[in-house]
Figure (spheres, rainbow, N blue to C red):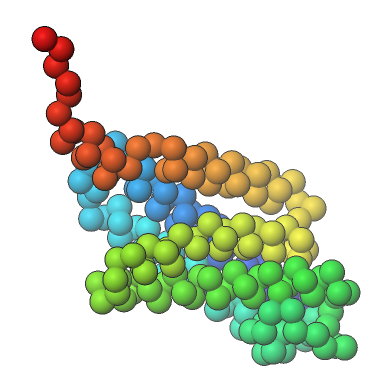
Length: 197
């Protein structure tokens, strides 16, 4: 067996996890902006958003487990669960430790989002919304982590995918924040227009 198999598994599962995080966020923004044009939202569209988010957790777990199992580059449990943890055995310099620490922070954002999503019906709606908004930091932290600590960043396809995903998230975020909210639309419809006599 190739002695670098775990390193390949860590790299590939990290990329797949990032793609799934991106797809989940793009899909969630598409649903919240109603850019798909469907109202009310069909249940399967929301289920797909949840499926993508849940799958990203699974692939992140594979990514972390593969890093620990790998003997090619050393990562222990403290390195993958404690942000910016320093050890002399670390595979990179201080700058690399920062980039790996950013990935650990992204992991905690993802866990918080997934746990609150599973408990959405039991949580106050405002709390759930605030935690869910941390999807933006999750996306940008995960993207930064992949671009600066990933070893596949020199691959043009990888870079173009990163640029395209950032553009898609930025565009949908602008639509989400600049489009009138449902509450404002309801208030505008309820306000009587003045009639000149």
